[in-house]
Image (cartoon, rainbow, N blue to C red; front, top):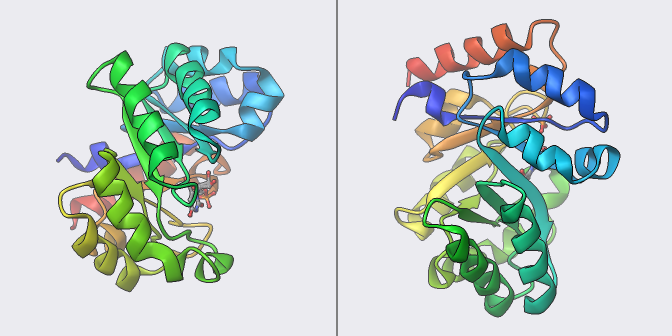
Length: 217
Ligand code: OMP
């Protein structure tokens, strides 16, 4: 995989015009943009389609409901142009499987990623003790990949052993203290970076310097 294919930029902001300006500056540099509730609530759901005109979009909705509701959310995200969707796994296999089923209806290229252990300090309270079960369930449900913490490379290594060849997307690089190169060395396929790119004076330069760091792995 090319180092640039390992980078996902989290566009965490509420203003649609600002988000599109940042994405235009970064266009063609990262593998994907990740968007979240702040942007969709602030700018409206059409931002999913607008952002997908500038690159691959992963909707980080951490979907966590009964299968019926999960399916509706997944359908809206993919219909509006998302390539990937981040879902929670604690809701159980049926809820995750529903998202995987809906993704498949939009094409083989649509991905569902299951959160295993979260990257922030609170991630150790509930997600870490349940990471084994979440990994097993993600594999069983046919997810494309999982989310695992760049802030804890030892845990990334542990999770890699449990998800086999599933893709690992790893947030927590930069603002949360994790290192891009270390995360990839520990088993991440791609890293998710938000504030240290979007908050930089030169977002493209910040993204390029992370890609350069990944060239050393
Ligand atoms: P920065 O800390 O600004 O680089 O942003 C990290 C991004 O990854 C944010 O969009 C978070 O919502 C997201 N994230 C985590 O930080 N930790 C997790 O455990 C999971 C996610 C995620 O699912 O993307």
